[in-house]
Length: 188
Image (tube, rainbow, N blue to C red):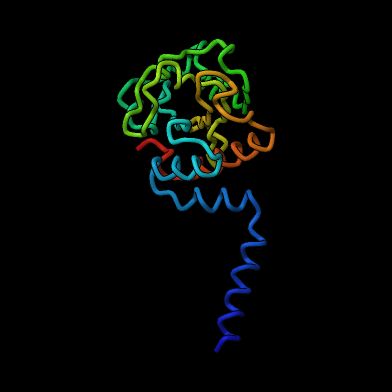
């Protein structure tokens, strides 16, 4: 009986060893049935707070926020915007990494919205995006269906955490590709 039990444990370990970091990302996200579940998983994968994940969906000529919830009702990002990094990500179809985001010209209106349901800090300046990674979410037909952004927030770049790496950016690109196949990324 103990032999059967240990054989089962050995199989589980073997499967876990075979699952690469990319496999873990794909597996975690493909089980998500809602934007909220996907973003909670992304928060875990990238070791960031829930307020440091944003997911938008293309709907006509705008990007609508799917997550966080407070940004869903706050407005949208026109794809034609010259100041919105998310609009540029959708139009250029390029991933980008900014470890000194505060010097990048961008529309910062969404940084001023309190994400109270996610426990965002109320300290002035604590929610400033210091570091940002952004990637287009592309479907199986190579159409851009959204934008995924992961950031580090804080008063200063040092307060916000470690710099993002090229490995983080590759993982973001994989996560965005995986999200592109999920039903909630496609407007009804």
